[in-house]
Length: 358
Image (cartoon, rainbow, N blue to C red; front, side, top):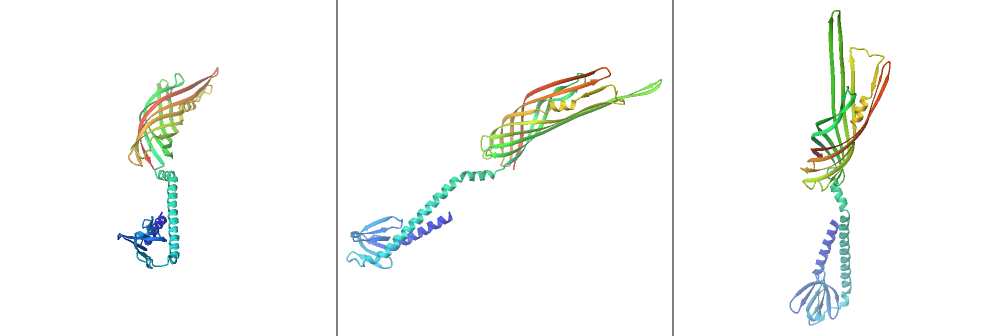
């Protein structure tokens, strides 16, 4: 662009230089500064300071001065020099003017090409500007009251796990990556843990005969859950150019559970003639490891390009399957039982959070 400006400056200087070379005085007393490019017996062909051609008829002319030669024409004597001697100078001027035109056309073409190039590169420029924006974000999502189901409590009387309704708050972390413009790839992670440990003992002392009988039980059960979700988030407007942007989201995920369910009798040796086995831990883990599918929508308010607050409403569909098995063996019988469960659930999660962009 700088070279084009220099060319235009040179053209402007050269044109103005030519405009000062010759002077025509008219019968009316007007003075016309110009560049003479052609002479004949009827008129003088000229170029003015603006680059426009103009023919001046001799019957209107009082006198003509040509460059450093001086006067070449006056009303009384006509041409005072042989105009053929001026031909080399006129041809040189025409060559210079032609070069000026070529330079001007070339500079105009370059300017058009540059504009076209800028226009062609506009999307790339936009992408570059877009690349200047944060590509990653880390968010903390808080659900103050989530009602859901968890297989946690084992009823020893009926020898099976039961479903309990549990109300609790959940904090979820969210990582996201800007794939393109308003589309984000999201990863949600949450973790919960609960455990219970019981121990009870008793002692009975007999006086006659003197004897002491100790008894007791010890049990421990717990559940840890880690949920991983993978999804997308789409903003309906350019999110940094508007204070508030609405978005839609969808995703799939899986919960992984680790369970512990152990119990033992204290102060007593196990009866070798009686055995009892089960898969309580496996059943508890399978029952609490659902596959998840979620859809939802929300709004996000941007304080700046680095910090925002948002809220969302999500609909979660989950499904689990589990099988509980136990075997009891004594000197007389061997009893085995199996229980299969398939469960699905649809819950709504409402919450709000913070997003940090970087």
